[in-house]
Image 1: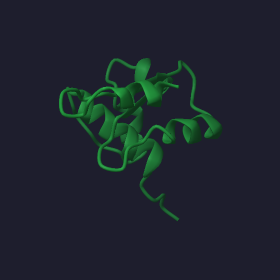
Image 2: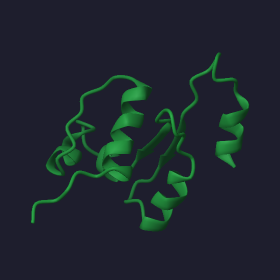
Image 3: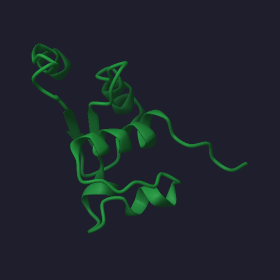
Length: 93
């Protein structure tokens, strides 16, 4: 289990991230499994689907969904994942 491996690294010395990727889209079941790797006090899960891996500009598709982010760090990608998959913005009614 990737979560157990990441948890073995001391937080005082390492910032660990768990990366999941697919060239397609994540299913609801896969998103739920990835959610299990979340930590309460920080975002460490990075999920990259075909929408992020295929275009030249990684955030192109997510901006259409209302998630606007520009980052060059792993922390930023983890925050992006959290916004996109675990706390999606409300959709217009």
